[in-house]
Image (cartoon, rainbow, N blue to C red; front, top):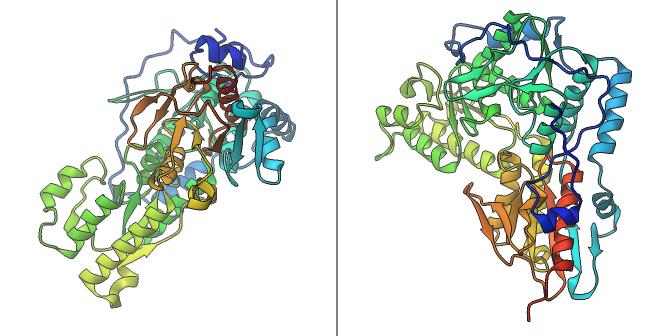
Length: 475
C-alpha cells in the first residue's frame, strides 16, 4: 500500500494540528509493487557475533567484500542517466525558495509580515544538507530506479530525518526491524538488494550480506570511511582505539567493528575517568569497575591494564569538535604522564576525523551564538531529527552560550496555542508555552542539521509566520 499522503498546507498544519511532516515522494511509475514473500523461510532475529580482536585483518576483509561485482559503491555506480534523473528529482523535492532567498540576501535574512506581527529570519552561514547526506540519498534513490522490480531492504535508517526515511518507505524499501535481541533479516533472500546507510554498517553485517548472495548498495559517507582508515592505522600500531562517540549509535557500532580492541567514551567526563585510570590516580576506577561501567562499549576480551597502554583517538564524525580535541589532549597528557614523553609517539596517536560539514556548521552556530550576534535574537531555531547527533550538538552550542534555542524535527512542533514542542540538550521532549513574542517584531536565528532538507526548514518557518499572523496579540 502506498503510504504517501498529500502534504497538508501550512495553514492546515497550524490550525488543525497535523500529525507532522511527511516529505512526499515523486511519482514512481517505474517501480512495480513488490509482494511480500510469504513462502520465504523465516530466520530468527540475529545478533551477529563480533570478530574476536586479533583474529582477522579487518582492513583486508573489508576490501575483499567491497571488491565484489555485486557490491555497488562510489559516487555513481549506476547508469549516468539514472543518477542525472535522480539529482534533478532531489533538487525539486528538497529545495526551498525561502531558504534560497535568505542565503542570497546580503545579511542572510528575510522578513515576513508587517509591524508587530513581522518576523525576521536570520540564516547561519553554514547549515543543512551536507554532501555526504545528499550523496547517500541519491545512491539509495538511484538504486530503487536501477532495480525497480527487485525486493529492496535497508539495514538502518538511511539518515536521521523522518521525512527522508518515509520517502524511502514510499519506494517500497523495507527497513530491517531492530529488536533488543538483534536485527530481523528474515525478509532478505538471495537476489535481493540491500542498502547500507550513510552511517555505515558493521563488518559482521557486511560479511553476512556477502555470504547471502545479495546485491549491496553502500551509501556510507566518505567521512565515516575515513574514520575506519584511522582505526586501521591504530591496529597496525597495536593500539587500542578510543572512540569519542555514543556506543549505541549506528556509526560508532560500525567504526568499533572495524577496530581490533576499542573503548567508546561519550564525553569529557568519561575521558577523565579513562585518563585517571591510565595515570593510576588515587580514586581511579578499578579494573572491575571500569569493565562493568563500559561493558557495552568495549571490545571482547578488553583488559584495561593491557589495552590502555597504547591508544589512538578516533571519533563519531558528528560529535562536537572542540570536545573531541579536548579529549585527545587530555588522553595524550595522561599517556605522557604515565609512560614518559620519550614514548609518546609510540603510545599515543590522534587524527582529525571530525567531518568538514559538521565542523563548519558548528562554527557557524558558534558565531551566531556570540554576544554581539545573539543580542538581537529572540531565539535560535534548530531543525533536524531528534535522533540526529549532529543536530543535537548544534543545539548545545547556543544553550551553553546562554542563548534560547529550540530543536524541532517537524513543523507541527509549533502549535496554534503559541507553544513549541522541542528536544532539550538532555534528550527530553518538552513543551514550552509563549515562546515567541506576539506584541512586537521577532528575530529568529535559523540553522538545521546535516540531514535536514531545506524544504523541511521552510515548512517550519511557515508555521512561525502563521503563528505570528493569526494569534491574538496579548492585551
